[in-house]
Image 1 (cartoon, rainbow, N blue to C red):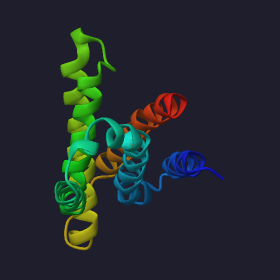
Image 2 (image 1 turned 180 degrees about the vertical axis):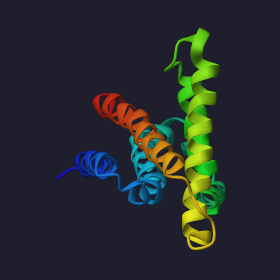
Image 3 (image 1 turned 180 degrees about the horizontal axis):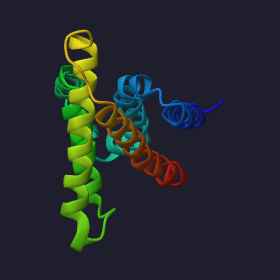
Length: 159
């Protein structure tokens, strides 16, 4: 079973959980799924980057960039996912006339999703969350995952 198939199956499970109104499950796991999809997308181009760009780097430079990338991902999944959103923006995925508004739309969805996930993780018993916010963030998590899953299809075909 390919990694892409597993990720798409996870996305289907998030959709099913959303339909069952298990918004907690979706909000907590969607950011993790986004990171896994982005990691898979990044792996498609690693060989090309190695041949064209990093082949000119010293071993020490490669190690520094690898460590910096690891730290960025560990430090903040929000920043990591925003970086991938910027890549989609720069790639021309959206029409020029709507690119900025689409970026802002998905950025806002991500920001609220990760904020609510953090509330669930750290203040679940302290803060009361409206069911409407949980439902909207759950839906946003699925929409973000679908956006990146589209990239999986196109990158997988080009790999």
